[in-house]
Structures are given as structure tokens and as C-alpha cells.
Image 1 (cartoon, rainbow, N blue to C red):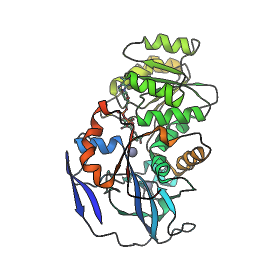
Image 2 (image 1 turned 120 degrees about the vertical axis):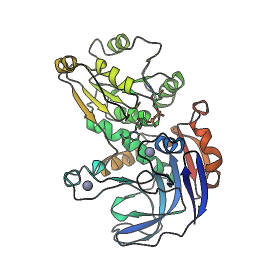
Image 3 (image 1 turned 90 degrees about the vertical axis):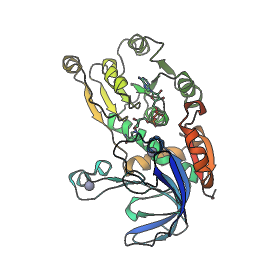
Image 4 (image 1 turned 45 degrees about the horizontal axis):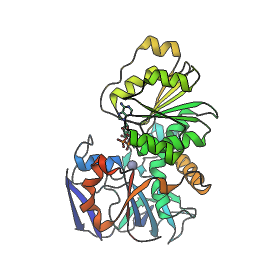
Length: 340
Ligand SMILES: NC(=O)c1ccc[n+]([C@@H]2O[C@H](COP(=O)([O-])OP(=O)(O)OC[C@H]3O[C@@H](n4cnc5c(N)ncnc54)[C@H](O)[C@@H]3O)[C@@H](O)[C@H]2O)c1
Ligand SMILES: [Zn+2]
Ligand SMILES: [Zn+2]
């Protein structure tokens, strides 16, 4: 089979490899779609921390079952996606159902080789039924589940104001699931074209530009003086994360979906007087995948909103670097390997 290996930062190479051999408790998928994520882009750029090369990237995957062992309820030929966070099942997090933050988590395409190849073997227990969704939709379930998980962590209640900071692919998904949970969404970014996208494609009512607006004043105005009771960071910018502590309503929850390398700092008295709650949000669980699929089936999320660029597997090497250029306006680049 053909696979695409990221040999070193900045270099991809198509290689011929043996098709995976069926192993106990595993399923072999014929890969049909590969969504390209910020993690893949950063790995290619060489800016993803703790990343080893060569690595086969790709964790936003949809495929067809070719062979399987111990996958009750699944059938050969079925369209599926899977949870690309391979967990141990035994650690404290796994025992508590928090498989998304397993102590020895191996994320496909990050810690182990991913799915930029024609056939890929996954643990059978990670499979998720396609439930009649298209391969495009199935490949979008994982990135959308990241936002859905953050929204679930926040416990968004109908009618409350949810400020989502960062309108990249992860933030956009977060806004959608905040809306689906009944939240009144406010999008904050520094990029006007991304804020336009929020208004036009996602129907977000309130958008604020952190560079040109007086953010606290705008937020106070939008929320009738209360400030948002949920703030979700999806920037991964240390500065944005530190600044947003000041946007929290008294009693608010602050969820960090975005991730950066530095140390967060904030005023303890200001945090204390708000009795605020700070949470991180890592990956997603099966519950989030199921929720995303159910919302797609109900038409509450339209995959066409996200897919801005399309290529075949053979064209990835040629196009990949261009997706790093903000001028090209990539939200989600989708790679096809046949199949409807
Ligand atoms: N929780 C998880 O498991 C998980 C999974 C995937 C990605 N992530 C993280 O989510 C974050 C977002 O990912 P993405 O792919 O959408 O990234 P992205 O870079 O495409 O989007 C980030 C957005 O934040 C905006 N931004 C930057 N600085 C800002 C500021 N000071 N104020 C307001 N907006 C600002 C940018 O303009 C951009 O639109 C990253 O940190 C990524 O590592 C987390
Ligand atoms: Zn991803
Ligand atoms: Zn574990």
C-alpha cells in the first residue's frame, strides 16, 4: 500500500509499505477520508512539541472495515470512524471513564503512526458506527468532538452567554455545540475574516475583534452588564488565555480547549472574588462522538461549512505547505481516497 510519511519537518515522502496484518482485537480499515488538522500542520512545520520523526500523520479519519477481530456489532464493508486516542483501559482516568486523558494515551498520528495511508489498523474497541453518514461527515466527527467535549465540560445551559475565544476550526466547532446546547454564542478573534465566517456561515450573533474593539466594554454591553458565564479558549495563545480571565462573569466557568506551552498567570483575588472555575479539556470521549453524530444526523451541523479545500491522497504532498498560509483561508482540508 501507499503511505505518506513526514520524514522531517517540511518533508513528505510517499512510500510503499506492507498492508497491516490483522491482529487480535484489531480492525483493518480501508481509509477513505483524512481531515487535516492544526496538529498535522504544526508537525509538518516542526513546531509541534514532543514530536518524533519520521511520522505518518493523520487522525481525523473515515474508512471502511476490511477485516476485523472482536468487533461485535460491526460488519465488513461498514463505513466507520474511530476514536484516535488509544487508551490503556486500566489507569485511574480510564477506570473513571475519562479515556480521553488516559495516563499513557497514544494519539494516532501524534505519538504513533496515523492514517495517511491506504489501510490502517485500529483497536476494535475504538470503532464508531457510521450510522449512515458520509465519509466526509465521518472524518469531521473527531475535530467537532473536541469542541463538543469542551462545551460538555463547561456544562453550558440554555440561555447563557458563552464566549468562545478563537475562531479557528476548533473554536468554530465549539461555537456550534455551544449553540446546540442552547448557549448564546459570542465569538472573539483578532481576524475579521474569521469573525465574518462566524456570522455568515455559523449564524453567530455576536462577534468581537480583540484588536479593534474594547473587549470588556463590548462583552458587558452584549451581556447586559453580566459578562459571559462560560468562556472557552480555543486560541492556544498564552496572551489570549491570560487576558480572558477578566471576561468571566462572577460564578463563571473557564474551559481551556486551546493549548500552549507556557505558564498561565492570573490575579488570585480577581479569580477568588468571582468564585470562578477553571478547567482544561483534552480530546473527547465516545459520548462526545455519539453526540456529534446525532447532531449531524439531525442536520444541526453542516459538514460543508468546514471543508474549504479538497485533494486526492496523491496530491497531499504538493498542496500541504499551502494550507499553512493563512491567505489561503483553510478551515478544513479534506483528503479523499475514493468512496462516496
Ligand atoms: N483540547 C484538545 O484536545 C485539542 C485538540 C485539537 C486542538 N487543540 C488546540 O485548540 C487550539 C485551536 O486550534 P485551531 O486548529 O482552531 O487553531 P487556529 O490557529 O486555526 O485558530 C486559533 C484562532 O485563534 C485566534 N487568536 C489568536 N490569538 C488570539 C487572541 N489574542 N485573541 C483572540 N483570538 C486569537 C486566531 O486568529 C485563530 O483564528 C490550539 O491551541 C490547538 O492546539 C486542542
Ligand atoms: Zn485534529
Ligand atoms: Zn488509561
